[in-house]
Image (cartoon, rainbow, N blue to C red; front, side, top):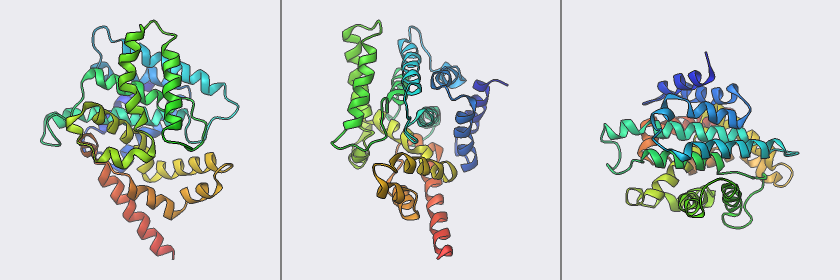
Length: 290
């Protein structure tokens, strides 16, 4: 049984109203199949989902491959890879994005959400490209100014695109999508993104889907706790107070109660229900431990 088959099988279990256990399992498979990010992306784009989204002269598919190779080589060369903002996180986001995009068929065939809250096949590939590169070059720090690290990732992506055979016009057209979508992943932009009428602006919808993909694994009970520990390790040297807080019950509840999943895509996946169930359980455990 090959690794793409493992991903295919997991994705099919998560088409509509998945269980927490099924959600946890798909991210574990991402960890298990390979530590090489570029090999993972190759396996991902060979799943039935992404094959079904392919189209004639799809330049974005090769750009996704090429960017993942660039990031794999960059991160492999580091003396220290951030504990949380690592290739494992990049895989989580690509898996979560795939699940959100897969759910679109249920949106089209149901009354969930606004009828225009769907993305095209080309936009799906642009989102995968953004998911691959959204934290390119992240050094484990916290933004000292708005969008500091997001701008760094955007710069790294554009520098790499300049080495491809794309024309300057083609690069600019792609970056007109990529820049606002990746900028939206700054946590301080989250509340403003939620207030936008996403059915009126396609880029806002795409940004919301990437942000939800960025957060999805972190709201799961088991994987979320592991990711909190990873983030604490990443912050321990430079932000010890924040590192201690992120793994505390108060820190975990604060995060879970702050983030929201509002897209019709995440509604199909029942992410908010999973999130609320986890919050109730944490509060119950906290009360019982006092």
